[in-house]
Image 1 (cartoon, rainbow, N blue to C red):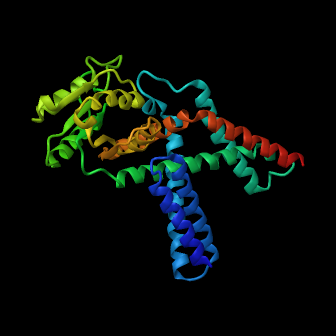
Image 2: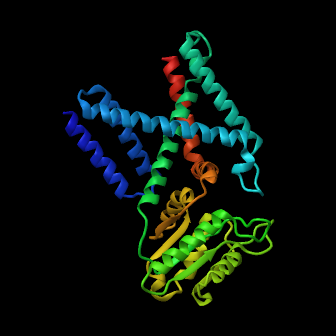
Length: 328
């Protein structure tokens, strides 16, 4: 019986991975499936269930620790996460610290016998919200792994997404990695490739990101005639929407269009492309290891903010369930 259930759940996970791989919902299904398999493995006997339970526990523990460190990074060093012209609001900072402290207090009260007869049962929705956000974080990790592993190999048009310029005009490590990846992909093709560089001019930049990116490509001997500049975008959505107008004017409407950005940014990029109705491939650019925690934290915050109404609804539902549970 155990084997049949495992096969069924794995089938659901595979289906969710292939259709549609860029959606957060399908990634969430994969995470839930993995959690169910781990729980079932603990109840079964034999070396295989034991191995599966061990792998599942290690994976859950690793993702949980990564999520906690990400939350602490956002709370302690928000200036590293938000962009230079943005600020983490006081309300959000207070909310993060309040959530952390109340969750820790709830766990302490439950584990030390100081729970019943106190106010802590009325705050059970808080660890419930923590579990929900942990599920979303795990799903974003799964989505990240999907888009990094399943990458395009054939391309006619490459769209390179911009990133902030250093000191107003220099290409930094993160953006250089995207451009170097585009050059590598373009040179692997057996036909001419057009590269669209996308990025406007920020308030602290001396020129548009697209102009700096085009200069970088030309300095690496990529023909200027095969470069198209998109100079108005201010975020990932406008990167994609504005670049669409450019590649549709190319022969065969751009052919096989492939988006290039850093791996931590690719899952959200693919989600936005799907929401815009774009059928594009993707190739992840490598990210300096010391920047991965910062980049991933920024992306997870962006994912939360993009669906904030739904997350607020989930919070209200958890609160309502908490109240009903105590009152009945």
